[in-house]
Image 1: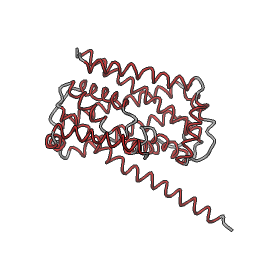
Image 2: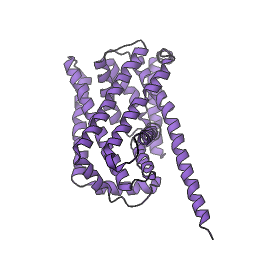
Image 3: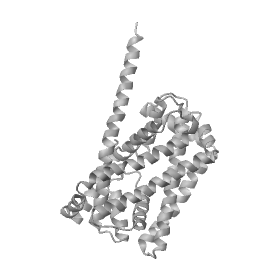
Image 4: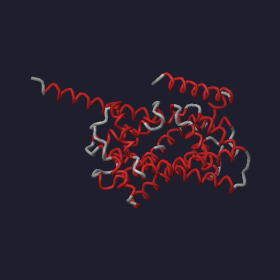
Length: 329
């Protein structure tokens, strides 16, 4: 972690801690404690988005992947663990996922291209989900500065997402390939030839069925995340409607996207759930508790994922050492 990243993370952590202190440690802690053993249910529920995202990745790969969906679900688990717990600006986990996929025998072009398309579909589905949340705001007749901010955030997300897709269609994949070559030197991606990524990406984009399936599965995951908010608040004794849960999760995604450069979105996530939750009548301490419960689950899911990933890396490292030792005269 560079000093600049470390400082940003510490500032975000200080912001989160300050928000909890402002609302009261006892109040926020009491809201978390009110879930009780239900926290185990919430941890188990978290597996559903991972499964859905893994299936979306499987849909993108199509015939280029001969295995079943389970290995890709496990790799998605690792991707999320890296993105949620390490200072990688929400993209390092995807690079790790492509690296591990390449270990399983697919070419670097397929691994990188599938990750690029899968990430694009996830972003596009996120924009669609945010659109649903903003539409619900107007349908409910809500108004105020936060609603205007949500609209502005959406207006920023749409052209950014469109530009990301357009850059790939215009053949700028070669620039992405060079970027991945640089990342390869950092993380040790197997193989040095990434020239096939652009061709694979464009081939995937021509398959409408592949794209539609991946998009719908990712969109379903966003809706599951909204149900997750509904479930958490219900367990806390602060129930909201499913429509309000969609509003909370979708608008919070705007805040998280704005703070993507902050490691683990420390502090940013807390602000999002506290401020957006207040828009639909959720008390600030409850909104903070929701964010902290999600972080507890990130730890419960992410730490084992990181350990599993390091176990794979360790076995590969020892295998390389054994091969080198066997070739010595």
